[in-house]
Structures are given as structure tokens and as C-alpha cells.
Image (cartoon, rainbow, N blue to C red; front, side):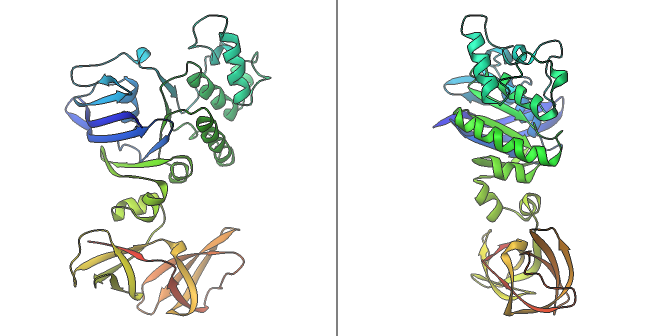
Length: 340
């Protein structure tokens, strides 16, 4: 069921257009990640949904309510939207419990709701503590609980893990994803972290230059990116120039199976794109020699030089690693992608 609908949204600052015809649909109870580099417009999109920015044209709806258009702008406090910022932004003069309950009307159910959420985020024993006594991860849990407390229609998360160290970030984002799904919350997360988007979200929107370039499941976005730029932004790529041969690509690897990502004609020059983990070493593969091995514990990126002089990388699980100077054969586990 479509719950958040962003249609042909155009937003700017003065004469500068930041969002240009953005369409986004979020199903109720799902988690959507908007992924893109700094300056692409993703935070502007979030602020527009929250009601913090007016829209030039297009519309934003939640359920059957129109929240924003060229003629309508529902105030932020009346939108039923929760916000989790990058830096937690807790009120330093309020306790953990008072921070969580900030948006809950006074009443006999308020204390029970605060206790419920504090327990839910693993801070049931911290209700009376000051924010100054919390770690970064604990502060973000309080921020999330505060956003969920009034039972919002949508929760917006603005790079909420960016300020945390890598180990804590990985653990906390898994906890947050589980919590949001356990609560049946509808959430929109903006991030520039590819792993975060792919691991956390049900659907991913890849954004660049104020437009959404691709929308789909994490698997679709990673395995069938719509453009070479999307492929490079979402993960590591290996790329070759080639020629299209109706279901095959002629390139430095020889004649390989390929999936056409554009309407291609036989004999047309193409860009062949694949992922390093699609490359495997096999005795009957294309001749290559190992140039370098970048060891990462669980696996390694192996740099290979083909007979043509072209170089490529293969991601190989440890401990089955070759050594620099070894002669090897190279094959693909799956079809490459072909772009005009």
C-alpha cells in the first residue's frame, strides 16, 4: 500500500533548483533509503517531506493527506512526522525519559509510553540519566525513541549513524532496522553510505543532481544498475571497452555473456561493467597474471593483468588466494552488464 507519495517534486533556493522532478513512493511499513553523494539533494528531499522547505511545484502526500504543493504547506508540527537527526540533538537540560516523552501530550499514558520505548531501545535503566552520561550510540537510541514516541505516520532519518565509529555504526543500524520493522514504522533514510542503504532498506533510491537515477530493491540496484555511474557509486566495478554481439560482449576478457542495459545494436561500441566478486579464477579462463593482492582478512581484492594489458580486480575469499606473479585463468560467475 502506497503511504508516502512524492510526485514531480521541484524545490529550489532562490533561482537554484535543488530537486528537479523527483518521484518517490514509500509503502506503509517499509524502510526506504535515499542514497547519493553530498550535495545531490537528498537532505533537501527529507526537509521538504518534513515541511521545513516550501516546494516550487509537485506534491507530497502521506496517506490521503496532501502535505505540500505549490499552494499547500501543512506546518511541520501538524504533519505527524518524526525526525532523527545526524547528531541526536537531545535536550541537555532534560533527562533521557523527558527527552523521549517530549512530543507526547501530558496524561496518564505518557509515563507508560516513555518506559515502553526506553525498554525497546535498550535503555530502560537510563530514564533518569542526563544526556551527558550517554555514549554516542545510546544518544542516537534516545533520539530514535523520541521520534517514535508520538506514533508518527513517517519517520525521517537524516544520516543518523554518520557521527559514530564504524563498529558501533554497523551494530546500531542493524538494531534500528529491526526496531523500525518490529514497530511497523514507515521510514525514509538518507545516507551516502552504500553498505548502509543496501543492508538496511527494503527499497533504495539512488540520487544525483537533484534527480532519482534508479529506484528498486537493494539487489536490483546493486546487480543491475541503470548507468555506469550508478554502478560505480553503489559498489566496486571492473570496466572494459567492448563491442556488442547480440547477447555477448567482445572485450579484453574475450567473448563473454552480457546483459544489455540499453537498447544496443550488433557491432555497437559498448561499456562492459561487472563486479569484482563476479570474477573467479579457473584454469580454463582467460590468461592473466597476478599483479597485487590487497588482503582484508575474510577476502582480498586481487589485481590481475590480462594478456591485452588491461587490468581488472577479483574479490576472492580467503584462504584460497594466489600470490603476486602467479599465472591464472579468469572467468565470470555471471553475465556482465553492457551499456552504450
